[in-house]
Length: 138
Ligand code: HEC
Image (cartoon, rainbow, N blue to C red; front, side, top):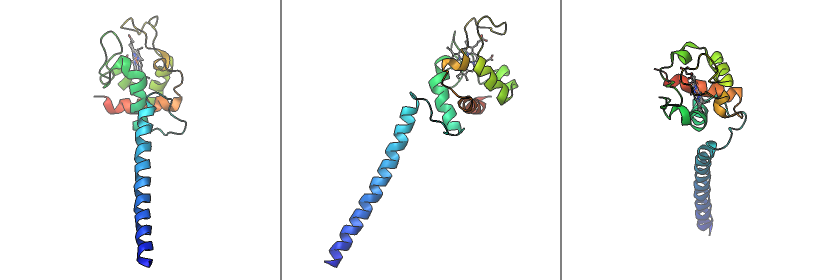
């Protein structure tokens, strides 16, 4: 009788541990999957992971998955002397403004939209993207 109770308790403990482990795993996959379509929640931190996610959802369409640029779209950002030469704060300021085709600095005749065309990006989102871009620069 006593022994049985203990076995049940142990079994419950194991099941509980498995459940907790399983939930934690589900949560992390759900977060990374959903993150591509939804805005990052406030207070998500400035980690490079966020920057990579935001980059791929907002910037990769024009600048390529690895920021190597796309023909007739965004420029290569890994070798951009312009980006490399700017401080992080100045690069964030540039991203907020973009570079319209009317800007004399525009070389492609294609516009770089403010915030990459995603007005929902906050300053700290843009900082995360810059932090991520710094890891790609050559
Ligand atoms: C709709 C396409 C598009 C999107 C989306 C886009 N860009 Fe751009 N981006 C461009 C184009 C086109 C240029 C080049 C403009 C020119 O001719 O000077 C550019 C230029 C830049 C430059 C300057 C590069 C240089 O060497 O002059 C940076 C930095 C940059 N983009 C970063 C980003 C980031 C970061 C994002 C995401 C937040 C982003 N872009 C989203 C099209 C885009």
